[in-house]
Image (cartoon, rainbow, N blue to C red; front, top):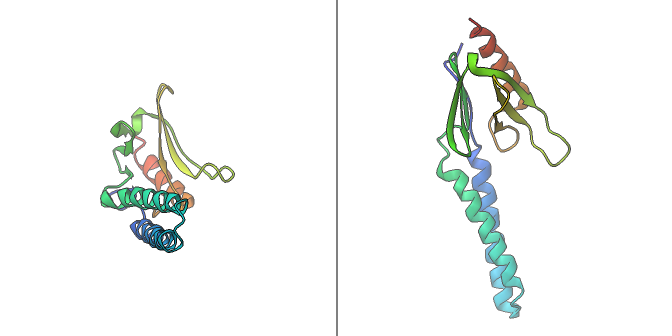
Length: 145
């Protein structure tokens, strides 16, 4: 069995989308300048902000979003890194996509059920929901001691 299961960002996708945003922003900027239309500068600003936000995903590309191994899981949450041993988890499951609004996620619930943490899955990450289910089930059952 491999040492750990990791969920990481797809940096190529982030880079591609950032380049597209910057190219569109340049086009809107040129168009706004050429046509002397100040309202087009708003589109330029929005596209630049989106492109810069996408570059944030590249900044920490080598840092995984979620790691599971024989001892438990560690994930990047809003308050920083969170780690739970397998014995400290009440439930760990993969939630599939719900409509168009909620992407698939790995959800970890503490033993007492008061805290839960999530890690994203899907197009922006290197792991599919099906692969995550298999890998997590394999590690959880191996750690049931």
